[in-house]
Length: 256
Image 1: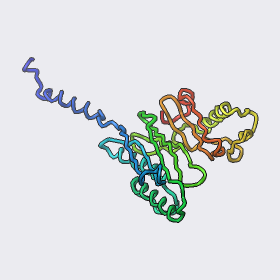
Image 2: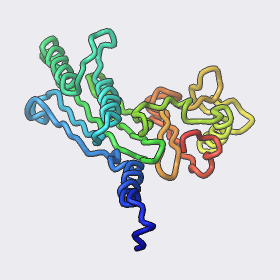
Image 3: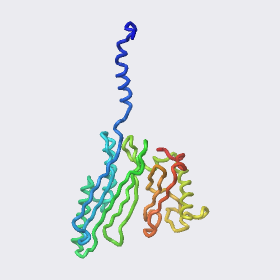
Image 4: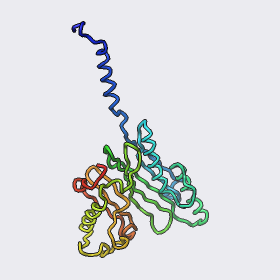
């Protein structure tokens, strides 16, 4: 090195470059771990009781984004255990489960010959993880007496950059055009003639007009449109699911 041309400030250049590059790298990637809660009041096969099984993903990161996502996930799970919409909302999943079991014991005390237990089986799974979207599916079976329980499938679509939940309208650039395309796909899948009323084969769409479901989820290959039982058809008909390849709908989407 030519000492005459040496600039002492150049000594710091490598260090400055290191700071610049490491400052731009996010090493705290948002990931998920499985969390399980299983509880009952004894041997439910011999003696009816309140049986609960909950599996759900928990976001892990050192940022507050993980906390925001976990709060949304917790709220979704707690909502399954709400028996009285006017009652005080439980703050934790454990409190919601305890209340669920307590309500069963009250029912059993009022009806000593009550031969059935309560059951809650909730399974959460991360279906898609992308730069702008994390999509989580929740399948649930709830039984609280009566002729049968109720199964449902719902989704959470989350912004991993902010920890906020997307509303369905946030997912699309043009929801109206997407709905037209989805209706064509739905009619084809369910064998509904293109020139007939959407309810001509027995569906229950309000005002005889096709509507997107509340439950919209994503995998790496498809967008999922799911109608739970009673949304557009009877309990006996069960839920209806329409899956459309992402390649066919990217032009309508705002988040992929």
